[in-house]
Image (cartoon, rainbow, N blue to C red; front, side, top):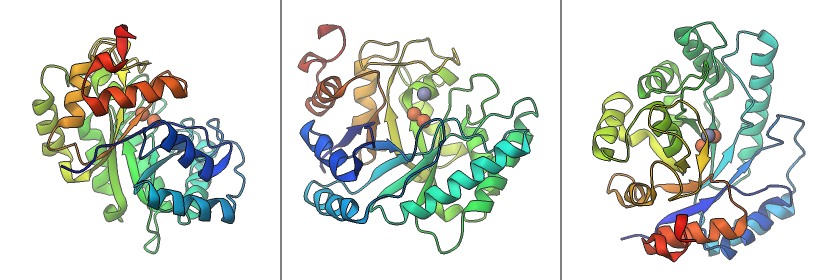
Length: 286
Ligand code: FE
Ligand code: FE
Ligand code: ZN
């Protein structure tokens, strides 16, 4: 069995080398970061020397893949042209910069249709992808499964599949499954993980799945709330989340924690998942 790849969301403020060192210090061999201020502000250039140092550290520590998360406020499916234009600009610029980051997968939220209806939202998100994905780019772009709160699209596997079917450079596309989001959207990964994965495979294809956001949820299945919880303290529970990381169809993927934690909390969760037991420090036993 190959080693489990697990990490957490980290602050990008001090650069790539720092993130790799921080990840290593908490037993992580992958991580996630925001490509820029989550509110979608101006992005600064990434330093060449920092990326060089990162490349060496990543190789030494088996960090083959990391996740670059687009600002979550981007809305490529908005009914407002200016909002869509801004999303396009940010995505195009991020994708260009990420060509220099080894192993980076670009994850983004499909958006909210803001009253236009799901079909139109789906069409607009695909349109955005067709505008930013060029034949010569190499970065894989991940659509994140969403909870379906408000007018969010991507709350069903069907919607994700519909976006994918409209993208011309589909070979550059993948999916990131967020455990809190799918649970909140109504997919019961606690009592029927196999059934949920069968539905995913039927609608999207399991070969499209490239990463997992490993989060517990504060709410019940189908609540459409999107409030993340620490592993073992939420409604999904530690055992069901552990089973996600051990599933033969998933265990080879990178797992990223987006739980409400500081670095020490993440270190504990990573240890619990690696050791396969909650009494290593997760949940209520803390
Ligand atoms: Fe996300
Ligand atoms: Fe997520
Ligand atoms: Zn979320």
